[in-house]
Every structure is written in C-alpha cells, then in structure tokens.
Amino acid sequence: MSDLAIRWFIPLELRILSGMSLLSCALLLVVLLFDYLRGDYDSMLIHWLGMLALSVMILTSIDHTEEGRTKRRDMGLITSGITLACGITGLFIRGQEYLLVDLWAALVLLIPGLSGLYLLSSPVVSRWVDSTLERAEAEAGLARNRLLLPKWQAGLKHVVLLHVVAVVMIPVLWIIDVAISPGDALQGGTLFSSPTGEHFSNILGGENFWRWARNSVIVSIGTTILGLCLAIPAGYAFSRYRFKGRGAMMFTFLLVQMFPGIIILVPYFMVMKSLGLLNTAIGLILAYSVTALPLCVWMLKGFFDTVPKELEEAALLDGCSQFGVFYRIILPLSLPAIAVTALFSFLAAWNEFLLALTFNTSDEMFTLPVGLASYISATDAAWGDFAAMSLLVAIPVVLLFIVFQKFLIEGLTAGSVKG
Image 1 (cartoon, rainbow, N blue to C red):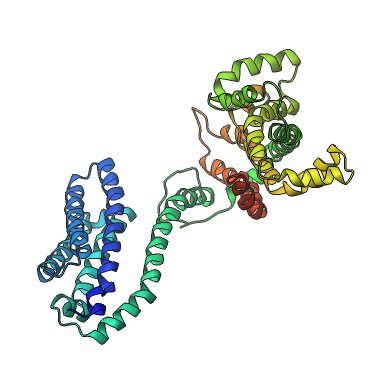
Image 2: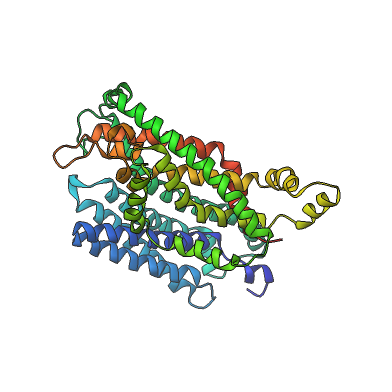
C-alpha cells in the first residue's frame, strides 16, 4: 500500500453508504416524531434500533484508516442486516393497517440496509479492505470517484428536496381531494377515488364568489397602487437624502413591524368609523397600505442604495432635472425591486382576513378570505365548497408568482450587496 494512488483511494461505495445512512438517520427523526404523536411505542423502539444501527454504519464507513478495516467492514455488514430486519419488522407489526407513512418509514430502513449489504460486499471494497488492491485498479477507482461522486451527491440532495416537496404537496393534494369528492367529508377513502365537479359548480355558479372576487381585486390593486405611490418616493428619499429625524423615522418603521397587527385593530376601527369608511373598499385600501408601508419602504431603500449615485450626477450635469433623474434613470433601473414590492403589497391585501372581517359587517363587501371563512360555522361546515373555493382563490397568486418569477429573483437579491 505504499503507492500514492493506492494510499489515496477510497471506494466510492463507502462514501455513498455514509451519505445514505446520514440521510436515513435524519429522516428517522421525523419518523420517530410520527410514532410519538400516534403513541405507537413498538414502532418507536424498532426505529430507535434502526437509527442506532445506521449510526454504527456511518461510523464504520467514514473511518478509512488501514488498521481495522476488516472489522469495520464486518460490523457494517452486521448493522446493515439489522437495519434491513428493522425495516421489515416495522412494516410487519402494522399488519394490514399500515399507512403511507409506515411504508415510507420502512423504505427509510430497507434502502440503506440493502445498499449496505450490496456495497460492502462489492469486489472493490473487499480488495480495499484486504489491502490487495492493485495500482491500476486504484487509479481507475480515483477516476471513477471524480466522475460519479458529484452525481451521487447531487442525487442525495434531490432526495432531500423531494421530501420537502412531498411535505408541501401533501396538504395541497388533500385539499384537491376534498374539493373533487362528493359530500363534505374531510377524510375519505382512496385518494381521488370518485371525482366530481359539484363543489366548483356551486362556487362558480353562485353570485357570492364573483362579488367577493371583485371586492378583493379592487382592494388589492388599490392597495398596490397607493402603496407604491407612497413607498417609492419615501424609499428614494431615505436612500439619497440626509435630513433631520431620518434615523428616528427609519427606526420607527422597524419598530412598527415588531408589533402584532391585532393591537391596532380597535384604533383602526374607531378611525374608520369616525371617517365613515366602514364597509367600503377605500377604508381597506388605506388600512392595508399603511400596514404594508414600512416593509415596502425598507425593501425599496435597500435597492436604491445599490444604484450608483454617479449615474444621477451625470444626468444632472447633462441638464436633467431632479425629477427627470428619478423618472428616467432610477425608476427603470428599479423595476425588479418595484415588482417585488408590488407583489408583496398585492398578496398582503389579497390574503388579509382580520381587518377585512372587522371593517366589513355586510357580506356585500366581503373579500375572498372573509367569504371563504363564512363556509365554516359552529353549526355547519361545507368542507367541499370551502376546499374548492380555496383552490380558486390560490390560482391568481400562483399565476402572479409564475409571471413575476424573473423579477422576484432579481429583486430579492438586488439589495443584499451594496455597491
């Protein structure tokens, strides 16, 4: 083993096994949480044993010293068998009553267990353990590692991302199933077993949805326009000018964001009542614009700080007025940040519930979130219509994110680095 290639070579199988075992251990923590919440202590014991076996597999696969390789490989094979047995036992004890999460928990143990038995028994690992590896084989293994290791690492990252996507998509699929299932049951049989469009017909065929949608569109667009008209000049002023009270005002903007919105509910209601703005779209537009203004100003200020002042100075030397500099140079360069701010203002108004519920006492002026909540009461719950309307309300938001995706990426990172 004095040759350099042989000394530096580590089988790719060991790296794959260590990464797979580490990922399985992390997933088993989630499985144990499910077991605890369900009170299934038998499964919890089995999964604890499986995690212990995986931990030993990790320790044996990351230790690459020459001394004791055979013992570590044998220990890895034993723990792989224990992990495999834990996966089979965990699925077997559930009988015919196992859920999807039980099958997923079994795969978390079965896949690394089978992989450990296969990888640790491979000829390359066996010769590496026995120190009988030849120079040419070690050189070929190093080249293979450089080619395949990044792909395996990317594959493990994609497995993690797929689990994150599954966590996000499961509630969405549940809502879709409730929306297209007959009746108003939250829990049915097989997913998408008997689809129907009756709930969507009830929503789209009634007048309430379109009236509430019109109110939401008016309030959201009005909030966006008024918010931008206030936030853009305010953010530019805070970025470019130094005036008395500037620091205190910026700190006040931050301080306001630290308090929950519910504490201003009563003062807002008294002001709106005294101004006669209850049950009006203008009242909601004013309330939403003021609520979202501090964050919008800070977002735009952060972007304006990154625009070089030399561009404005050059335009002023060429005879452009201060307003012309702002209109012809600053605004075109700030479109990504303005798009993000506009989207934030629109979504804040589109999804807001508490203020809309408080200021509107007539269902004629309900917005979509308030109208959606009206389907659920203490005596009745139209879960099918509720789920169908939830999906319809989410469609504009999804479309906006798709349309503004490019601006979102640019705008969210534009103010992160100054200069």
